[in-house]
Length: 323
Image 1 (cartoon, one colour):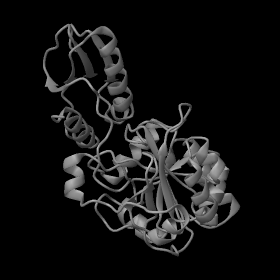
Image 2 (cartoon, rainbow, N blue to C red; image 1 turned 45 degrees about the vertical axis):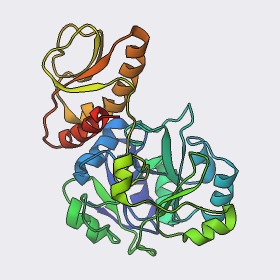
Image 3 (cartoon, rainbow, N blue to C red; image 1 turned 135 degrees about the vertical axis):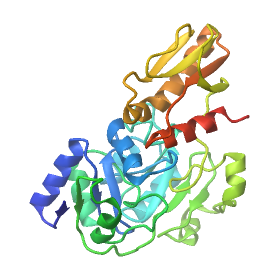
């Protein structure tokens, strides 16, 4: 469904977002695939619609800086950058607040979230009308060219989303600049609509990206739209478990194996979307509970590779990789 420019259309798009549906919307950079960032099932639907092979963090869009900083913890540099470049094509990766409402899946299980305030009146109107943080990666199938018109969105996602809010062609046409401020320094994770030189003029030197292959080997990237390391439990992870021992915690999918020292169910009905929404919370809980109980590892039941299963298995393989 294509919704044209107008208050009634914005209100309808906002209602769809509140109902957990996916709505593509224009920003000044490219069209985003919007979902309620607080709703795990809606976030999982984003990955499903895009055919995303692994769970990258999603940029969360807000109508103003104060709303973004209610979820993410800014330092003085972040506040300076927000005052200068928001609304605009700058995304900042910042620590999650303890009270953050953003679903863990939207942040790929990390202790950071990526936030920005877009400079498009229709995007801002939609976010205000929906009254929520809106997760919004580019509205295209994974690996395809980012869309800059509503027609581009429908070329790739027709039948996979509830609606596209048509705001005409995007003005910038390249994705936002992504800047990581979470670790104390400042690192450019993705060049984009704000030149890094303008950022440096405001906050000082910014580290440039290391090559993708090296970053993947060192598991150091934290940016939306890039291969990256996700939250890794401290307990070793054993995949495709067909039995479980009392000294092991179990991440279950379907009918749980008997005998585990601790259990987290991803989906008793083997619903892959439900499993995606419960994956990161489960790894965190089992890690903490396993440490409390003196367990030695996390065993994981087999998850099929269909649909979202590919992304779930990608994440589990990373969690199980030698460290």
